[in-house]
Image (cartoon, rainbow, N blue to C red; front, top):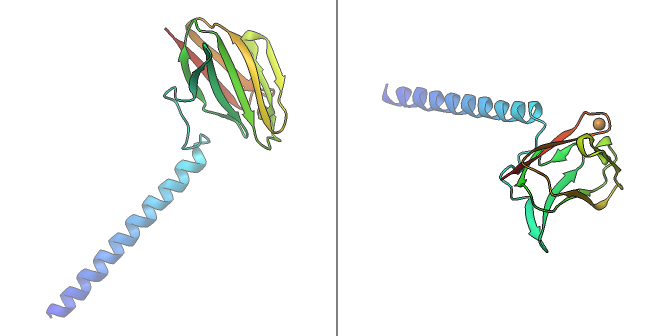
Length: 140
Ligand SMILES: [Cu+2]
């Protein structure tokens, strides 16, 4: 009797364990497919560095823009440095309408775009089809 109880207990535990694993695993896949933002997305401003008195915002363009939101300082001479790597999608056609900037990036490489010294606020960027977007937030 006792060994049967034990076996039932083990089978029960394994079933719960497997079910838990499957549910967790399924959620992970769903989260990844719904959210097109990569998990490595940086939104804490760590893609922004100072270099020779200029603020460099690093943006990666391929299948969209990463990070989607960059946080930078307002009133500082700013360069948007866009890096591509085998970027054959339309994120290579970068647009910043409010600054009248339209850049067709090379497939692989890095381009510096001078943004001047932006005031506090947000600057929106997008691909030529307005499918992929990014935002630069400038804060005092
Ligand atoms: Cu596009």
